[in-house]
Length: 498
Image (cartoon, rainbow, N blue to C red):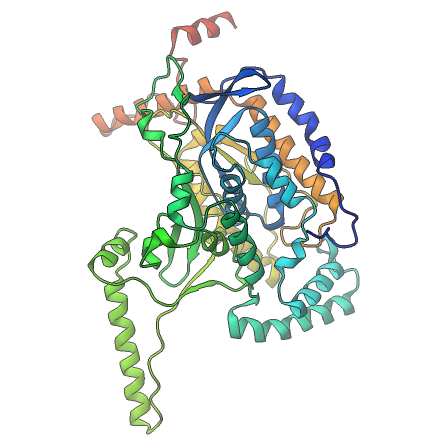
């Protein structure tokens, strides 16, 4: 694959060298525990313990390169991924993790993804040449959010606007997204994942004979409960106003969901509104089973079909009364766009109310909101629109975290300062820097994560909620945001010793 822009091809060794200090830091942690679901693999003639976690990655466009850096360090630390999910860029990396680890679910994936990414020309994703040229020029003229040349920038935006009016009107986006769809489907097909059926089979952990629960682990989850892994890729259905979770919700949109190519879910999840055309479904499944499936997500397809038919009949009657030609009624079209519109960081995807057997690690972009808060600038119409957009795509996920404060222990924030999420012209040195930023965030997270403390927190929350349900109206003895005193005798001794 071609290198980005005028850059000379870069060897992946440059990426690995940039991440090596962070790899050294996690290796120095030794046999630190991150999970109670473990397995063994032979590496360099010695048994190595692998620890399994769930992983959720946020959307962020080109910032997704940092996800590869984070998973690279996680895997170097001996972590493997049981359930995996994300939105937009997070969905892309989730799909590549499962694809690039091959037929062995305990094999690492990130080095193969890095080989794919290192010299890939991401500008190819902008597959309308006219729109691409204008977009590139406008971005350059407005570098760092400041107009370096007002007249040129104004002209570029005007040209983009004129082009955009036509493209958005005709196909609801500047770029058709055909190149990306072909690319991701090709990657997944080459990896043996051309159907949902094949994907679900690949997510099984049955082939890992050494898979077991750590001795002494206290969880209601059994080994049989975790033998089937799960993927959750988020897309936004703006027609029925549904948060689509693929592949689980494929049955809502296709008659034979097991035969659908999972690459289409990734394509839907990354479809930035206005920038890429949406994935459009022109014929939904019908019948009692389909209606039952839609009812589960709070939507009645039967009622919607009836309303659609009545509106079409009313339109036809109006045309006939005016002695105008009556056209055949337009069929219902469902549009799927960027999952980040509704849930950019779906950290709740694998949530269980019990004390977990394995944690759900979350990787998102930006500095920690709890310690680096700021006010959104809404002084101009563009700022106002962006503030609305940012609020809508983060608020549901933040609401879940606020109601489940233990999840703050599971999340790492990648510092994306100075990087643009739609900067497809990113030069190689900046790509390396993004990769390293993800590696750094992962290392810092693993250093501070305390698996025993997290389980204590979850047990406390579970006990508190159980007590609250048993005695409604009784005040909780302790804030849910703070964990209870250590539970086990060993932990109590450790506390006394300190």
